[in-house]
Length: 114
Image (cartoon, rainbow, N blue to C red; front, side, top):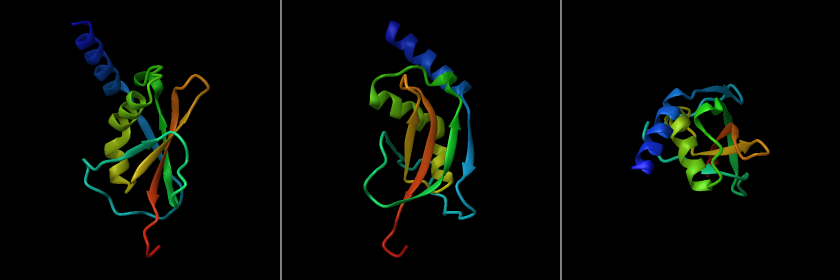
């Protein structure tokens, strides 16, 4: 019962959260399906990528989650659909010292022809 209430509170807080997007350049990428799978990373990947832009996150619904999978799920729930719309394959979370997200950098994997 307590877990169910906690989950409902967390979902309610996510609904109150918001994020603004700032493009990194004038380059626009094709949108991916709104329900696409977006990876959430905690460090910059070694794989080549292009930075699409940055989501500035309103932390009110993100909480102080220490578990990486839970943090990734919260960020994905907050900006995953928007990330798909701008053509992102992944998000790189930038955190404060206490582990809360402040930004999510939207990236696109470099394709062979790019």
